[in-house]
Length: 384
Image 1 (cartoon, one colour):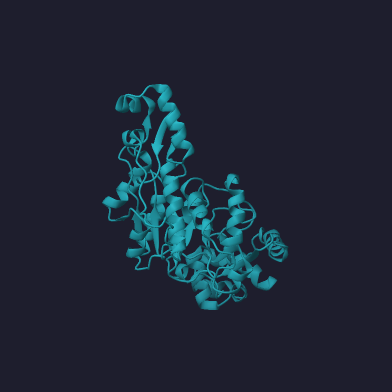
Image 2: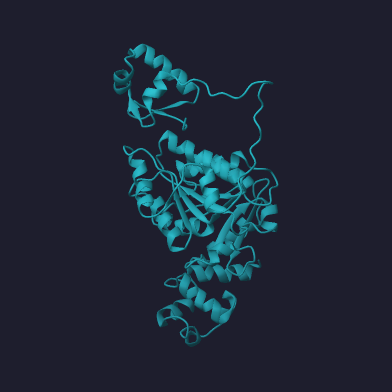
């Protein structure tokens, strides 16, 4: 993209009072932004309001510094193995799935491997969003990671929002099975800030991994800080890129339910994982299921709904003349169930003394069978 063309797109996004809908009408009438800004106020007023036409005839004061920052960002050296791009509605690499939504962004900023940008970085019908609580249970985070790993292995790109909790676990699960040089991104992170910063900072290392094996995208100009209003808005991109949205855990007031609602409005599938009736993080999923979301218990359930084949499982080696067997389950695990539980309840269920129980809990925790939760609670991990 030439500097003048970039300037036109940035000016269109910065013009006060001109939203995406008005901008698309102008593009349909006049072509590229450079042509729009050559029109008279009267000609512009044939497509937009008089106030918008007047605003379009004025150069926004923030255009020059943003243009310079963006141009330097594009021309500068990206981290090794990555490239930076600006995709506009007129770019052939712009995601087709977003073009089919009601409010596609005019401009997308992106970071990812050069090979992806050289081809089609957003192939249709291969993305699935996985979203959920920023404060998931240990089982919820593990579910997000395991589902993402299995679904990416089946050929799906995992889309999420780089938030703490379920989002981060989903990105990590997809990256666990990422292959260098793959033709499609392992995962796509849609962020609510400019791409020259990472929010939250705890996910800085994760963002770098995503840039190496997937894609970071944002509709927000460079320098945009983490403003609260931007995160619900970016959820339409997460839903719009994806065939479906899987909600792992979500409270009733969770932003994940916004993503699910946007997916429904865009005619996409919504999936939800049920959880404990006692966990606040499960109530949003249960509400979605009551409203018609598809209840899923395994990645296979999602693949069947999307009519995608499951990946062939590698055979597990066994000794000659033997068959795999499941190790016996401890009495403590049986008593624990699958809901978070405290020491007093476990002692009442098992009759064990505190010292013996603490030893067994530590052993189970080290083995990854049990997770320690805030408030002195414990939760069993896995489904068996």
